[in-house]
Amino acid sequence: MKKIIKTLKTDTKLQKALIVAGVVLVAGYGIYSASRPDVGVIDFNAVQTKAKVYQYVVEQQQKYEADIRTRMKADSTGLEKDFKKLEEQKAKTKPAEFQKKLQALQKRAALIQNKYRPDVERIMLASQIALKGVEKDIALAVEATANQTGVKVLLPMNNVLYAKKSVDLTDKFVKNLDKRVDKVLYPDPKKLAQ
Image (cartoon, rainbow, N blue to C red; front, side):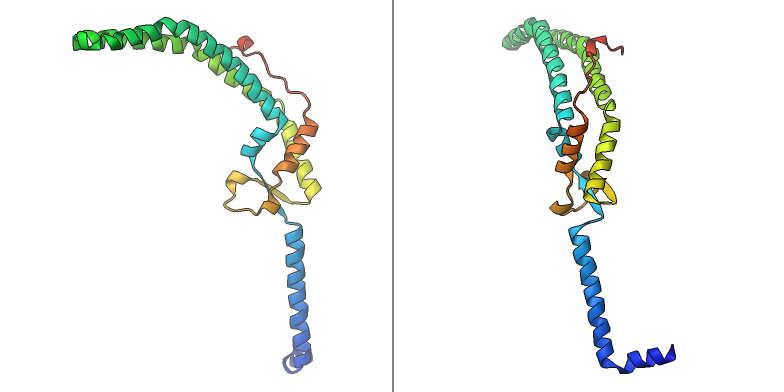
């Protein structure tokens, strides 16, 4: 061992060869790791706009919300006219009387909102149920994406301070998810209990 150490200290050609070998080894690892990173990221905010499963859930949610807006608008048509009428009469009305009428109109508006609040909550619950039904498919799509790309770790993009575009696997994940999920069951919110 002492002989090897002495040779390493005195043989400059060997030193240079070892340095070059070390640089090649380090550079080679750098090229390997750059071409095949061990960590990937998925931008789940983008997934919500790109993946068919999320698009379907959003479409269903918006359909039911549009129905509620239509019914709320029908219920509040007279209320809007009453608010306008009160505003027009404001200058001619005593402040205490104006305040009393305004509070009565605000109370009517709150009653209308409260009337539809359970419907809105049921729509949100239906969306959660629909997405819960595909959680296993989401997990399998994450695993498939990792296996296809060779990464050892996949992180949500919102938990990462910085990531090069080359480690963003969002589009591959969306393709895997779309392959796995061909149908989403969106329950009728009207049939859901609070």
